[in-house]
Length: 127
Image 1 (cartoon, one colour):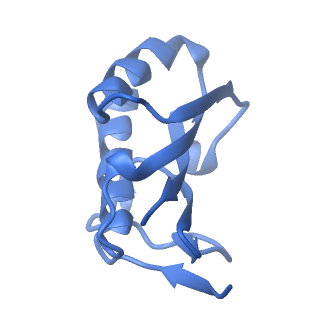
Image 2 (cartoon, one colour):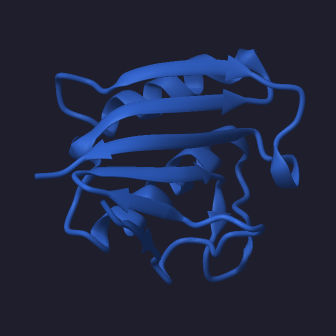
Image 3 (tube, helix red, strand yellow):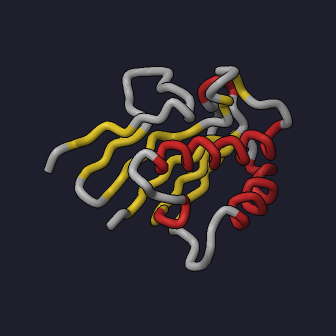
């Protein structure tokens, strides 16, 4: 199978040597997204809540390049700067999906790129 790079101008450009996402067969592997506004090229204001909402906009933009949606996500990994933000992120996360929810892991980490409060990466299945 061939690796196909995914790219959307409606999501932040990669800030390093990686792709926004890779398609491999019927699977999509999206790099971790931060709460970056793709137009302003800076972190959205409003803390973890605003960052989480922007992350899902960014993920949706990359998925749109292959006509996929958030409901195609089968696995998510959430990285939090502060586990005290878990409830806030979880509340927003729950509104982004229909049941059955994707499998998920969540971790507290010491620091995230650009001093973000949250980062989310996903694996997606498409038909």
